[in-house]
Amino acid sequence: MTPAQATTYIRYRTKTDSTTFTDAEILLLLGIYIKDFAKRITEVNEDYFVLPATTGLVANQREYPLPSDILNN
Image 1: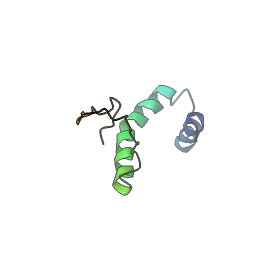
Image 2: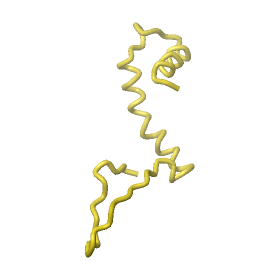
Image 3: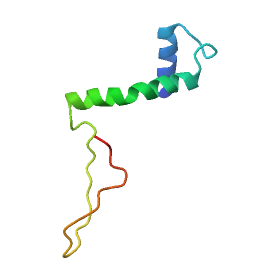
Image 4: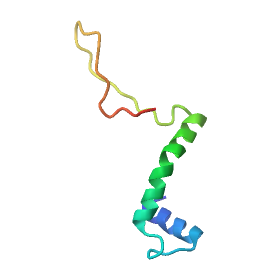
């Protein structure tokens, strides 16, 4: 589902239009619930958001930094 389709669906379900329920208001509400959605997904499948990280090994080096874009969960 694209963002435009999601916006259309939300407005359809709430019986509103772009004047009574603006894009900014939709984004605000989605931002509040997105962490809850992600938490529920990881409760069902904890590996869903796992991104493989690889790095080239360096001779005589035992510690490697974690990627700067690592997720909280």
